[in-house]
Length: 102
Image (cartoon, rainbow, N blue to C red; front, side, top):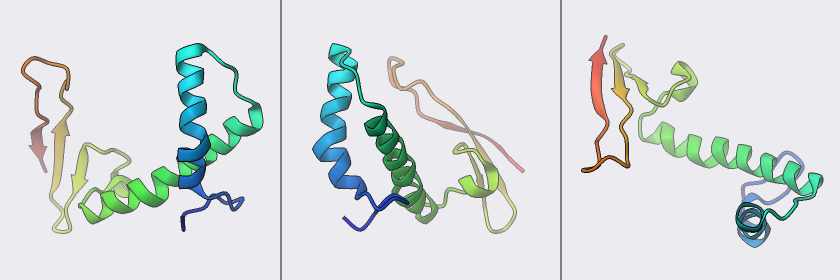
């Protein structure tokens, strides 16, 4: 409830109360979405990505701000770990693997 867009819109209530329903109708029934609602949805998604996902990622040690990539982690000691993406739909499911360290 504390996370708001720059315009003051509460992100979570908008996403749960309005956006998910409209998203489902757009994806599954091709219903139209009003431009102002789409603008608010984009603003909410960007805010959620920055304020929630970004904050959690930093606490987990991700260095997206410094590397611009989720798959590269720059350690405080200067070591850089690079991970290769994996296909989650492979049978059996593949796991990401570390491909390098600098």
